[in-house]
Image 1 (cartoon, rainbow, N blue to C red):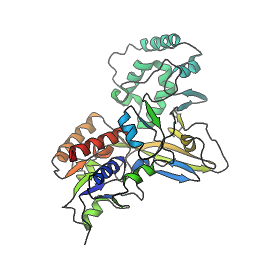
Image 2 (image 1 turned 135 degrees about the horizontal axis):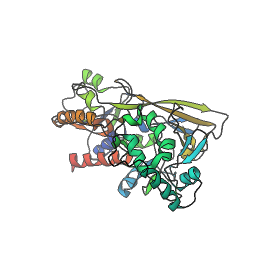
Image 3 (image 1 turned 90 degrees about the horizontal axis):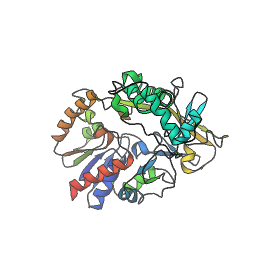
Image 4 (image 1 turned 30 degrees about the vertical axis):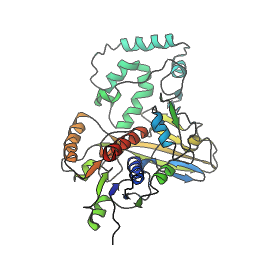
Length: 369
C-alpha cells in the first residue's frame, strides 16, 4: 500500500522546502517531488575539491528583515561576505554599484559635488522628461558616460535586445551613491552560508519524503494524488498545459571550469563584463564567497539567452504582454481549490531569497494558523 501524505510539494527549492519544514512541524506528512537529480532548486551548491560551486549562478543572501535573517540562521552558519562586484569595460575596471570609487576612476574627481555636477550636466544635455525606452531612461538617470560604459552593453547582453528596443520600466532607478562604499546591497544582513546552500534545504526536508528525477506529470500518471493538497512551485503555465501560450523568460547558460593550478583567477567573487563585444555577462569565482577555500579555483562564465520550453527558466520578462498573460493563468490558479502556487515560477515573479522565504511563511500562516 502507498504511504498516505497530506501534501504533495512539487519542487525542492526554498519555497517548497520552507513549506515542507513548517508543515512537518505541525504534524503533516509531506512528499516532495523534484524533477532534477538534486534538491535545493537554483540555490544548489556542488562541492568541487573543497569549493562550494553555486551551480545555477551566484546567490548572496541579503535581507533587511531580522525575522527572516534569524529564520535562515537556524539551518546554517553565515559568514560576513559583502557583495562588492567590479565591472570590466574594455581595459577599464570600475566598482559597482555606481559610487565615488566608480566616478573617481571614470572622471579623475574626488568629491561628491564634482560627481553630481558631471552627472547633472550630462543628464541635462538630453532633456528627457518621458523616457520612451531603456536607453532614454538610463540617460535621464545617470548620463552618457555611466550608461555607455556600465549599463548599455551588459543590459543588451542580458536581455538579447538593443536598449532602444527595451521598455523603460526595466530600470526605473539606477542606484547612484555619492560615498566610497562598494557594498552592493543596502540591507542590514548579508552573507553566505559556510558549507553552501544545499545543507539548508537538506535540514528543512529532513522530515519529508523526497523523490528526485520525478516530474509532476510523471508522478500523476502513476499515483493517485486525489487525497493530497498540492504545493506547486513549477511553471504556472506548464501546470495548465500552456493553454494560453508560454510565458517568456530569459535563461542563463554556464561554462564552469576547474583550474587546479590557479589559486586566484580574478581576485573577486563577481566580475561583470559590460562591453557588448564580450559574449558573457559576468564571471563568478566561487571560492571567494567563502574566503579562499579549497584547492585550485572554479570559475563560471554566464551567458544570457532566450528561453524556450524544455530548458531552465530564470528571469521572468515582466513586460505588459507577459503580465497580461500571467493574469489569465493567475485567474485559473485561483480556481484550483486544492493547489497552492508559489515561488518565482509559480507566481511568475523574480524573488530574492529572503522574499521567497517570507512568501512561503505567509503561505504557511494562511494555511495553518
